[in-house]
Image 1 (spheres, rainbow, N blue to C red):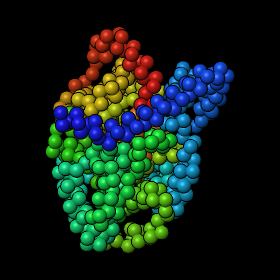
Image 2 (cartoon, one colour):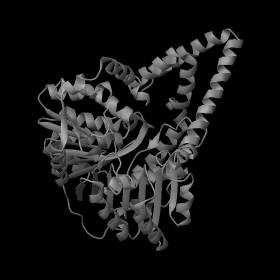
Image 3 (cartoon, rainbow, N blue to C red):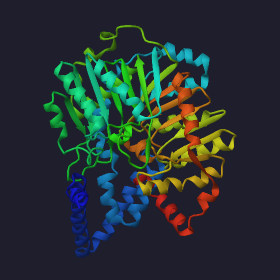
Length: 512
């Protein structure tokens, strides 16, 4: 009874009901107006056709465009109403321009590192082209003088996170999608409060949608009372918003610009397996120490300035040379990168497809969700057809059953082309990693679904000849031994009606 009451009175339920009531009121008004005036039907049809033509000419994913076009043409009034609320990226043009201006200002402080890129060209032209793409189109340079440490579980990374926070002397930046009060965040919060009291510049960003069921509505004010500078990304109000689809899905921790963490691990107890949700929670993370952490520092400051509608006037005090005390150990080539829904560059997807398409021997993948677009499907299929050992490891226990079933609907066309798919039997796999040919990998926050690839702010690290590469590979090989390999019989044993239904639902996957 308490759970039902909590659900009914929860902020997520209240916001959802308020938005549904607004949609219902507008829809009833439009339907009544249409019934009263006969010309309205023709007008709505004309508007629908016009909007569809606009969508056709947009620079966005074809699957995303087709899904919206089908909805608008099939049910024009509902389709147009929902599209104008959730689908119009052009309404964020002022937001995009503001973000671009902030990025230009911040990225002036990133090193050029052309000499490192040229050194990479002589070692491996294929990897050089990937690194050059990230440098030229995501605007993040490649580094050496950086050490890496890969974590195969949240409970492995957590002690090092606490240690980095304890040792911070100048500033702490944290940016996370999900934050929940409990053991994990309680330990972190104790350190943050103490560091803020000591004069350390502590700044914290959380995504309000991601925390809608885990934090009170104005928790940022509680953090501010502790002396922690805290803001929420895209505040969730019980009113319709044109940018409620965009979320800050990144996971970033930076201490003094020298030590940084990223990966799939949020700040909630299931991520360190202090509570059990969906069996064992398998996740991964990455620690960087050295010059490459400066890119994560810039990423955070860009988001901080974007949310606060300011420019970072005191940026110079965060410059790495102000706090660097000793030379850093070099561990291969390290290139952090960010992906934004406010530009037309699908950085995360392109990096993934480049790794798959350029693999010679193998590519292994961790992903919790598998809802790829047509281009990604063809890239996976073509790699497997050409003899590359392509393996995808998925959860065995779902966190979202509809998404889980939809992910499984993609198994058959991949398996029949030679892609090997595994489901992790002990529980839910939340990791987002690629590794290929014993030489390169990427670890980050980016899922293989439309939301991560097109609608979310994301981040990751591209690694070449780093010790972390082999650690990722060995972790994946170990997890495969704890997983069930899926065969065609598994795919075909479902009733034809269910398979047909999932096939239809896949048409609207970009909108979920």
